[in-house]
Length: 192
Ligand code: GRF
Image (tube, rainbow, N blue to C red):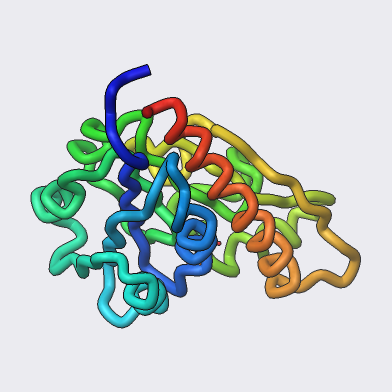
């Protein structure tokens, strides 16, 4: 055990509504292990920024999400980085700095149904079109490609007869909200 003090500082990168961010805020707000300390958005006016504001967490809106220097500086002080509905590819220099300490949540069972363009309802439409009997949530380490880093954990959900992209997305999202805080706490324990 090292001599570090306080919970592991978690920065969360977002682009959208922020329900996964909310799951983290709820699970970690009084945790001795990990705490959300900064929320960084690739866009202004996201639901995620409003959630961070309500929780009193400092936020940054990136002026240019493609600028690695801006992201590097926004991540100063972060020990663990969570991509929770973040739609931009992370620059390799930032990936390198946080290798093994940067994770992403994806709404399908990777390595299937991931990669460039596979986000939002497209993922669930592809799962339904494939005839798969199961889908789920995946948390994986971030590397230089979309959705390709090593898988850390998955939670499976059934695909039900008559599912639409919306009903399947809602079932997977519930699994995401259970899985993500668990993985963050596990990783934080290993870091601290
Ligand atoms: C989630 O389905 C997540 O897996 C994906 O984007 C969605 C974000 O939802 N990467 P939210 O912003 O956390 O509500």
